[in-house]
Length: 105
Image 1 (cartoon, rainbow, N blue to C red):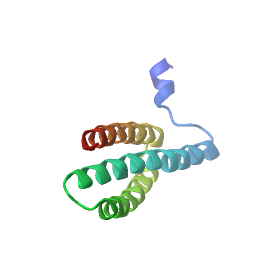
Image 2 (cartoon, helix red, strand yellow):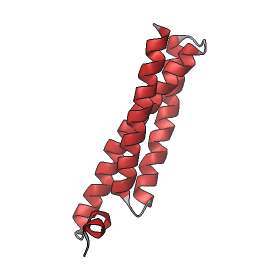
Image 3 (cartoon, helix red, strand yellow):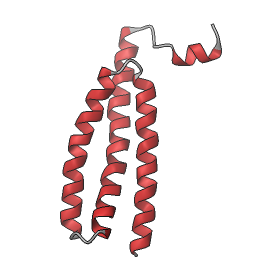
C-alpha cells in the first residue's frame, strides 16, 4: 500500500470513524463559522450597516452555516478531508476579515 493510499484510507475502527466525524464536524465547523461571521460582520459594517446589526446578521447566518457544514461533514465519505477544508476556508475568511477591519480603522 502506498503512502498516499494510507492517508486517504478511512480509519478501520468504527469508534475512530465516529470520533473523526465528530471532530471534523465540531472543530472544522467552528473554524469555518468563526471566519464566516468575522468576515460577514466586517463587510456589512464597511458597507454602512450599524455594527451591532451587522454582528447580529452575520451571527444568525453563521448559526445556519454551522448547521449546514455540521450535517455535511456527517454525510460525506471523507470527513477528515472536509474538516481540513473547513478549517482552511475558515482561516482564509478570518484573514479576509482582518484585512477588511484594518481598512476600516
